[in-house]
Image 1 (spheres, rainbow over the protein chains, first blue to last red):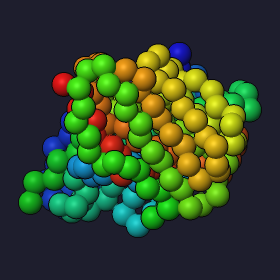
Image 2 (tube, each protein chain N blue to C red):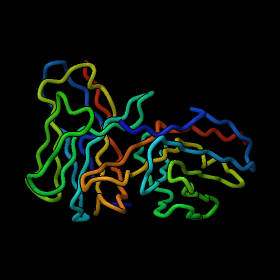
Image 3 (cartoon, rainbow over the protein chains, first blue to last red):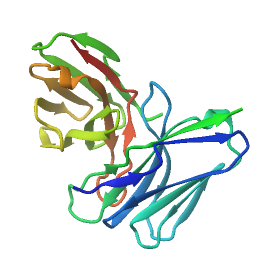
Length: 113
Length: 114
């Protein structure tokens, strides 16, 4: 089946630094979503993208829908300790009324004070 | 927060016993989903529903059944729990599963099968 690739599994940054993460696929996706999950909680939607090339911001977060429709990028600027968590990408393929979201395995972000 | 409540939040059970997890929504969304989350696997779809009494299988449906008798409730049943079903289970809801399939998640149920 379709897979979304997120790497590395873990990232360690210093407070105040910017961090970028990407999500890639061998298939075209119609929608890209970025979620964050805090320990013991469910994923929370950060940003949704619907058009190739679209660039959307949510506070210090910026995400882009790749031109090829096979990737998406998330950037966090000026990181703070509460940015710690797992960041998932999810994509909706273009085909079928019952097509379902595919999720990446997530990147665990640690922020050193 | 999306109005999604999962119950129970934690459960410990024994191998071979039936277990039912409940997802309740107050958003009147048409689509509801059950996922499991395991280390190294991310979120995997178990079953989903596209309306009352309308359900379909996901990628890891073996050993699980679901029911949706009301718009607001989606039940996940483990007919005879096994240790491999120890996991964190998430319910999600979506208004539309086509162009804008934004899914909102509950807080999860942590299930341990001993």
